[in-house]
Image (cartoon, rainbow, N blue to C red; front, side, top):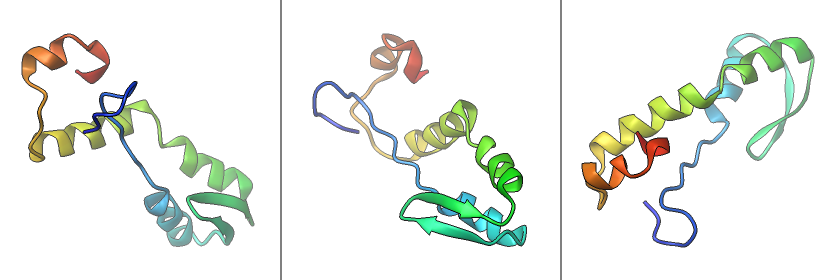
Length: 84
């Protein structure tokens, strides 16, 4: 949770899981600190990257919000449909 304006909540998702999927698929790639620059199978890398979408991030967020103590009550969250 973040108290800095204008953000109520920040979600940080790194690319480690997606890099691991590329490695497991046997795709060689040039790493960036949190992403991929080039690879031997650009279409395969794109397919892996396309798996990361709003639904994936929502599931990640909801999992951690249910575990971590937080200042937001159900009433607070009801005011922001994007946090549902």
